Length: 77
Image 1 (spheres, one colour):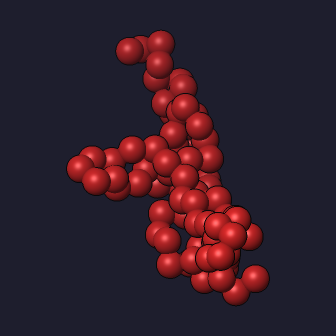
Image 2 (image 1 turned 180 degrees about the vertical axis):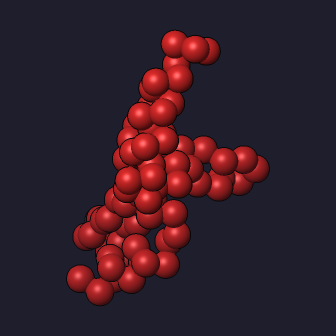
């Protein structure tokens, strides 16, 4: 554990400097999200599909934890 202290101190400094509340170690762009029964590191994906042909006409992938902002940005394009 003593060997990991400098790494953890660097992560804590980065969090304080950027205002982040979490730093995922496996993928720095993903965010902790609530799933059906637990929490997991995820992305937020919104897809717009044309009803008749079922083709994807627009998509958006973000690390924002809430869907409402993404839904608005996808449908307003």
